Image (tube, rainbow, N blue to C red; front, side, top):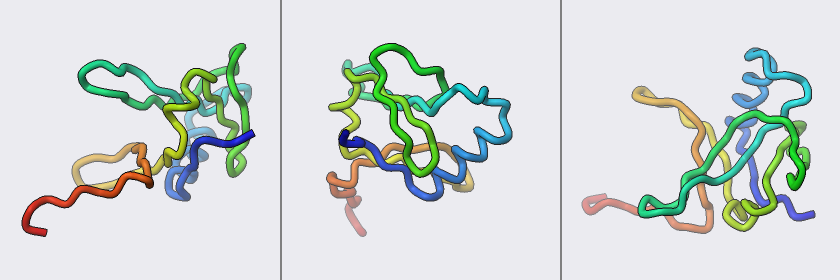
Length: 106
């Protein structure tokens, strides 16, 4: 089975921290998915959930992961990272295949 996503080391640390310290039930896995698709485009979803029929299940760096089969193609090549800055912190989805945009003046 091809694993469509990767998880950076910073994101792995934060996910494991949540699993260990936020009362996530032992039978819950990290669920990765997509929402929307209208004018705003795709948005990505991350949460903890029990496995359901039709889920693809795999373990990535000791983190049990669930992805609905219909979301597979939208997640192919995506990397989950964790951002921690002065203004915000949270998980981000990055497609390493798409070059970063540079603003004028850089």
